[in-house]
Image (tube, rainbow, N blue to C red; front, top):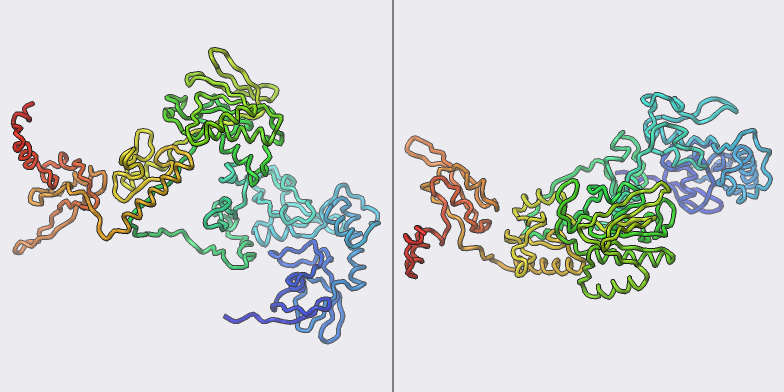
Length: 616
């Protein structure tokens, strides 16, 4: 690859090295020399419409000229003056004319103050004009978006920016994508999408912010992400939709963006697996009585993002731009319920809800000192270290706890005055409470893809659909499949300290396996009598651990090649459960070290009559 040639020029008395093909504006900016401009964007072809970037040049042959820095390429020995007397005088005149056209544009006022333009020329007869006809909107739509939905129309004083079918009633003729690129590059804020198209821009909800705010197609998934690098959402990226744009590729200095990359599946050989897939939150929309369809009703996790300094409101608790004064928390949403309207509820306790309600109630009192906070609870389960003390501290801060029974219905409705009303029963009396904000303490539920993962890993689930441990007390992080361990809420709802402890234990169990040269396996495993096996595959279908497979065998009998299928048991995978033995139609499956003959012999040895036992 040939190296790019460099040229040396002088800008305001300073020697500047620039790559051949760069413009004077680009070379000056690379050295921190400011040249004002309103029509330049590094991703677009130069236009020179605003003339503010005009500079005085002197060629190596001694010829002097005034040119636009954004369009003129660098030359060897070129001398550039950005603050010559005639240049400053020209910029002042241009700013006077622009202010006469657009007197209310803040960007122009700022430049005018910088150049000492105090008395602009008389205002032109235009009302609230903001467009300076820089052409940035038209160029980015044509060059980068590949649409050309907006451009110049008219001539002279009638020249303006419009769409080919200005606000056409037939939306099928409207080629605008409502991407907002034109509004983004407009230096004066003259472009409004509603003035260009009837199409409504669809914001991309931020997954990390739970849809409380939007994100760009290029984004970092969440703070402290590992690796902490941006990703491109190809489902919304303009390049993936139109094969145009690619602005990010040009702006990325390390050349890290490669649109030719494709997803790939990587296979790894591992000695152990730790399943730590986390959990989902109960969907309160499945219980209409909670009124989750209202903007003022949010979940505990959504409230957590509101309180966070890096959240959508930068830590200020606001709903629809207003600070709530009456805040209600409702516990056990989706937990400790036997039936919900749209299906079976979750009978288990999610363990963490009581304490995160207490914490969030404390945060409300901390952020909004005059707020009234009410908690509708069923039971407070403050079981951890320091939890009970914190619960009483929150009550002493003025948080009002009102108990209700699990069977007492609770409703959240919106009144005509726009406020929420929470209604329930406490101690046999109907309680009604007005609220500006209702926070639902949604419980922990298994991930939606947990069944698919359980089938792939050959591990079992308990009745609550979480992964099942080998033993609740002695092996709480093991599964029935050797070498696969559990950590965190994929096994059951638990708090952070419990998750950390279980993860450390799982890591220790992994180390105990990887540090050994040999692994002990279960001695009592399934065994195939090949003489009896007919290769029907019934045992393979019923094996829950995938330890049995059918293998084809070839035998040469004189001139005949005989192909047969026989079952094969992988001793490392078999757990000796015995499910395959009654399934075999010819009795070819037995358990090694645990055959019927061995069992009978043991019974006879202790004096038990086998025939009598069978009769009973």
